[in-house]
Image (cartoon, rainbow, N blue to C red; front, top):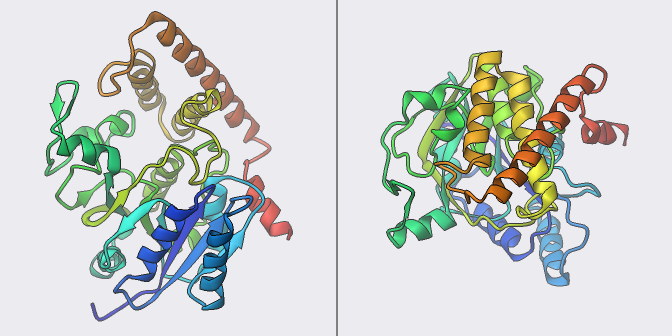
Length: 334
């Protein structure tokens, strides 16, 4: 590659120790010559050895390390973007494993195609890798490679149940990226003024999908490159959120975020289709979710579904006078 655009690697982190250090090491070991690393750290207190290691990297000029006293994944992304210098903004999680060519693979897509505004990388989830190695199946489907995603994967109403950035092996245009492995042209932020919506709560599920749907309105393509791959370890807690996936708070924010995505970005018909699939899969537990069909569990999930919709509706109504970018406003006041 003759042209090496500067890449800003932004790593939001919360409550991670050794996995954070391992992720940073993999970034620093890239064979790409032109990048910076920004660690946006929302961890209240690290282990002494982790604290020392990060301080040494800062002293050596290898990373920029920002300590925050609040926890918000979209807030941390926005914070990092405002402090970055790169022509390409690349986000990874704090529990990933990278190959040395990872950055170069992201970069080549922007150099080769000016229509690409974002790159979605392939994500090998640790648990799915383990299932595939053991030959396990999920419902009636076997883990196997997919060349091209079906047409439904570009339909915002139902795409979320057809987008598979784990097993898909051919480059192609996609609707969204996964937050642990995605990059953007700087002008998406600077020229078009897009920001991550800080109203997406908890683990901030769907915040990247919301961002990508708005990005597509600029006319840029989101390009999936299976060679821009990483392994996502998928630790249950930490990362940028302070709640367990099994907690009641997580369940409520999960539904709130899905409803907020639909209410903000979709037509009435698309939103109704999304909400119907959400109910069918996550409440009734039908494929591809494969959840328990116990009447008590269905009733419980149904309660969270209903409460999540009410809270999301309240969020949308409140946006008339408050856009919810509370962490960005706090930063601007400093």
